[in-house]
Length: 389
Image 1 (tube, rainbow, N blue to C red):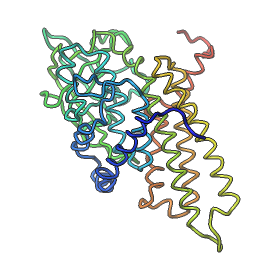
Image 2 (image 1 turned 180 degrees about the horizontal axis):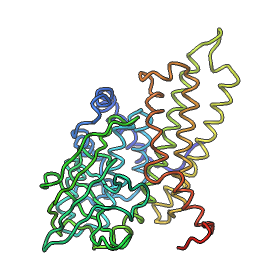
Image 3 (image 1 turned 30 degrees about the horizontal axis):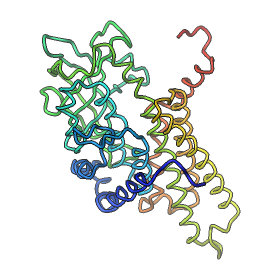
Image 4 (image 1 turned 90 degrees about the horizontal axis):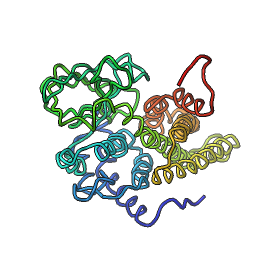
């Protein structure tokens, strides 16, 4: 089915971005996967060509266009090229972190940070999760106690994407530890601040070229000028940005499933068993027909959600629907496609093997499938007996 979502400018972006991936990322991917990290130069190279900060105003070096279709092009081509680990750092930077700097920064903060974010000289991350915290954000233990014109930050975060490379970390802290949600604020911690240390680059099942780290804060002196908006507004800021974050993850899920389908179609037409192409077996046809159908249906919903986001009308519930359905689709589709590769599907020389490992986290980060279903269920008026708003 032909998509009507994109115009000529988006397709031009697609061509130039894919050419950049093929030249700068694909040839180096195996090495970066072994290293567990991509070099910082990936961001500066992408930024220099205009692939970062699409919605950052032109005066700060960005594209000056708020249109998530640009972000979607990047997501789709990253997955089509089999470069999900490296691409995750870019999509986190573009889709998840940039909106905080645009929406909540003062003019002075924008002057200080946005040019570097657009150019790729300043790499961003967001730090919410803490050891043992799970999905209960209000239970965070990291504190930021004001002392004159500074906050003193103590605590730790874990599972932080771009955690090693990041220069600016949007950090969720308790500025009022006596409160739950109302005590949360967002501070930007910067590389080089005394007492801000990075732990190990975590070893993961997949997404190996994406640096994921633990962060530790010991009496870190953070200027009050690094507060995003006002104290106590952090939880609402996070909630307001979650629909775009979850849509980004959902779009990655559909794009990854589509890429897996493409690799499998190519493989089954070339590989022979029992004297005939694997593609000629009824099971192969049925499996791939089902995957193709599910991908097309999910794509239609993603495209609707993208336009709703552009119009400022994407609800948390629709984003939750997209996130859980499309990431579960990704996991299921990649698994079914890998089965058709036989033993070769378990070999890392085939992109389907890497896609299989990369897919497992997507139903967890950004809100688990179970939390997404809770959000949807509550909107339907379904609550646990005795629960309150």
